[in-house]
Length: 542
Image (tube, rainbow, N blue to C red; front, side, top):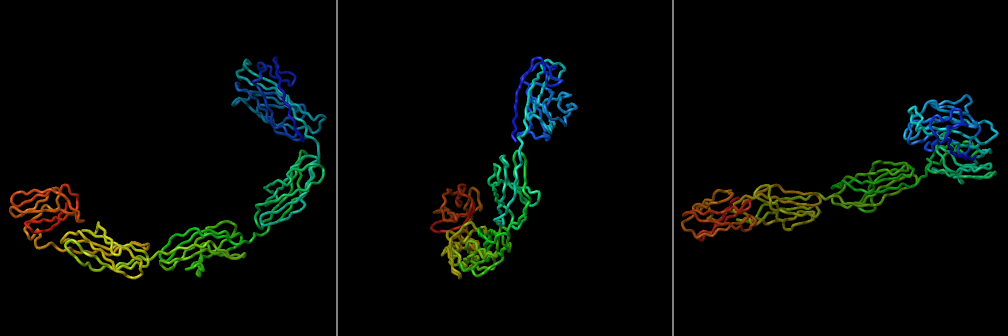
């Protein structure tokens, strides 16, 4: 049916007359600033005896309250809202109490029932509306009148529709065939479907619109269905004269299709000397799938282990992991996931990894070639097959502080090999701490802390010569006491690494020499004194 709405607006300077007994002439003069709308009239035209919910809205941006008088040429008003009243025949509706406006408008909602029989298809709604100051004084109040019209829906025959067959049923789709007659009016055709007779889903047919007065074939393919599931289905056809449905029909989708599983290996973690953990995902493709992990020394694999989970089902990607243990250190392995279901056997991508080597082993040996300022440290080292860098840490305490590479400095053998490191620029007659350090992919290993003592100076050292060095340690000045009278003297200061330091000194009295050590950095130093042709060494600390 076709709905047509006509709108015309008029005003009267002398008041509202001729459309209701109440009118609005008591509220000032007509003014176009007051307008009305009437919504809810059927777009396809009214159908005899049907009831429609209508809303009358009065608009005026400067007023605070409004009222109306509404009549209809056919039909009846009912369900009058609060503050309004209908007459006994239902042909007139008016306000009894002004309604306050909000934001420049106020609305009234009520029902209108179309006539059950009528000589005319046209219904005219006359409305007089006012917008007022609500002060009890009509000065400044505005009102106007307007008409709204609605015609009856065209008479006709509702469509007919039937479901003629269901074909191409798969695990997730089906094709629904039908036949419809539009009975002369444009008709929309669709399919209702769902898991119960309440349906719940709807999709358009092909074609979605039919016309004419003869049977037209239609078809609809439903997709995204669940496997092994029963569905309710029916055709629906709607035109201006009504809606028709086919008979409800049931069908069941096919069981899930069994395909080879899809596996992916994409992560390796926790690599140790004897094991590793592998991660990935699996899609069982709707078939129960048994899972495992294969590994070996070549791409022939040869061994297998359990995965988590051990099985998978459904049609979604599932996380998959497997942990290998009992492997050989420092060894290259190949690995992949494996899945078996009714469709066959599938594998993930191959990947490879190497276990970590064992940590190196150090057997320290005796220190040799100890002199006043040097010594050779010795050890046997087994690299356990991994590239291993070797050095000696040494110093005056077990905090060490100095490092010397061994000879050789690195190795990768799986048997013990000898290494040594000669430490130089040492302080005579001094205890040194040392240890060997070996670094490989298998870890960092240290030998136990050990000590050796450098040889003392010659018999001409300070103590035997009766020379006293004080204070030791010193922060600023260092005094040599007990020198012979009028010495022929040469004095040299070196750091323990052999770097010479420049200081000043001054003879004091007959047997003293004062050294200014303020410019030296904190640490240990070697003092060499050539006195009257004799050479002697000692150490001091700044």
